Image (cartoon, rainbow, N blue to C red; front, side, top):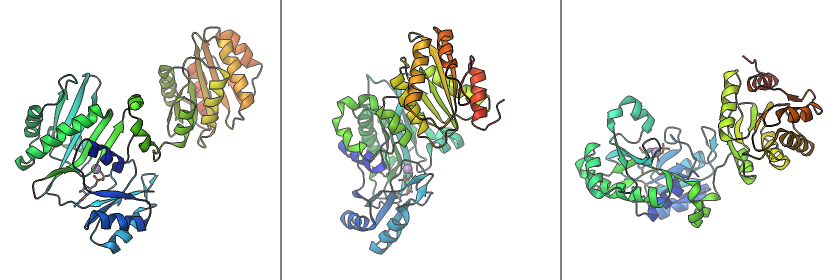
Length: 383
Ligand code: GDP
Ligand code: MN
């Protein structure tokens, strides 16, 4: 689960990471109240889960009430890269001497945590990585050893932060590491981490992704969920327990097994189409699960055709076919369906599908052939 900046800052505060005093506002009047509580000058910040808010006009300094009104009025409702701003975070503005970057995430291939620190903060880290890769000091941290203050100090030195920032940065990095590990984050990022003219170091922004697999031990995370910015399609899929990722194309995809679902996306791409989603229905393709999957795909306005790609393993072909047929009786589908059924008892399964075939329900034996048909039915030109 991705947190909004204000939630990330609330999370940081639990681990004693210094953040500016502030509060959330959903209206201009609330923004003024929060500004008075935080103390002028303030910064008014759009709460959307997308980077580069500053550049998009979603982060504004305000010296007085009139400016808060002006900026809050402008930012609320603003569309930032497809995300409409419904909430603001208003915090006491900081004086900035320098902007740094700090983050922890998991390096799967190294099987260790990865810390990244740079004296070039405030810009997207991908940009720094491209323009000046040496400006990022990386460390791998063995989860058993953790991050000691000594190691953090060496790391800060390697990143060439201003010596004035050393103590503050070491302190924050150790706390951020604790937040990342004990707080069960997939990502804990501060950009910018600032040094003030007075020599204080603190977090001006917060990007936190919580590891959903750990939610069972964090009942307090429920507080974060209310505002969660789930794709409506993903929310619907989640309710049904489906593994679903929304994409931008027009060919809806249903497959059993994550590997097959990914290959299906690849094949659709390969023949010149664009998948509308990734959807793994798992092992058992029952009528219940299939109907749920079709409902989710059906609710996506962009879908022009549906490609069901099932490889029968333990679940036999005829059971899968029956499941599809029953599901189609329950759900009225808006787009034509192409089915490729293979594996155990594929022949029996295809025979069942055959008796239900029409212009909008087509069964084809190969993955490539079925992908081409699905792309054509979506109005594309299959290669
Ligand atoms: P992002 O653009 O979405 O990453 O939003 P940030 O929260 O990182 O803010 C963008 C930029 O706005 C920062 O890099 C700062 O330069 C500036 N900014 C944010 N907060 C303050 C503040 O309190 N004081 C000043 N002077 N600038 C700020
Ligand atoms: Mn930022």
